[in-house]
Length: 278
Ligand SMILES: C[S@@+](CC[C@H](N)C(=O)[O-])C[C@H]1O[C@@H](n2cnc3c(N)ncnc32)[C@H](O)[C@@H]1O
Image (tube, rainbow, N blue to C red; front, side, top):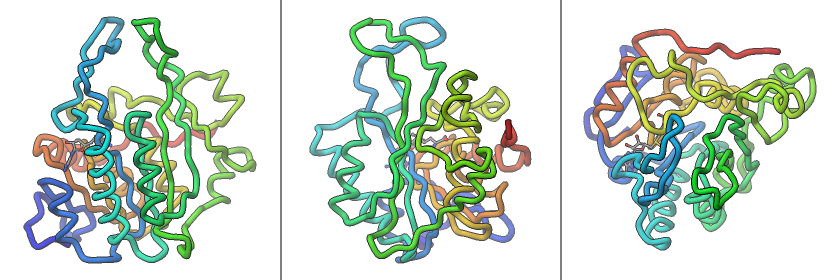
């Protein structure tokens, strides 16, 4: 763990939060300690463009942290944090990263440059995505995730039998669907809906991930007792799901308000919604 004091830790130190710049804190951490890293880094999409929010035009503004630099600067940033995360993974550890087209190709390339072994790319399909008001593009309705192990020698965890048990005994595919019932029936059974009001009742984060997305990731690729890390943890979705599944957790964010939100979510003791088996 870094030398600095944590912003928060619970009694048995199974849930620890650090406040500050991820690159600085990562550099203070010792090698090979995490079983699984789940990262939702800056998307670099707050570039002055417009989006549709509750049916109205709105500026894309997730926060200062999401403002893009040049293509080279963004890639350099991705290389730096991915290199540190690779060092922090145990030999059989693995990493998940989520993102949109603004950053995910740089992330995938950086992972290849660093010698991660790419395991899967996953498409998270949001069937309730807002319309594209400019009518000059297809509606953006997906996010991607890349799953990779530390290197080619790593023996990564994949709980295939458990995933099948949520999928009528069939192997689970790499397209994970949102709310549309018909598509869900075609593609997959365990629906990943946008965060519910219940999930947001402790405050709003502009890019909060749904509990079910993290639940699928953690159930698929970690074991009880594993140490899970999220270097850009936001409202702490990775952490609260990890905690609910008996994993230990370390998270970092540079915004104190999001760490406070995470502690509230943790202390509320309930996670919504529960995994659904349809
Ligand atoms: C995409 S959001 C993560 C959202 C999270 N998955 C959730 O469910 O709430 C990225 C987070 O990274 C934080 N962040 C961005 N750059 C950072 C940096 N250099 N160091 C630490 N935190 C950073 C932001 O404050 C933001 O909360």
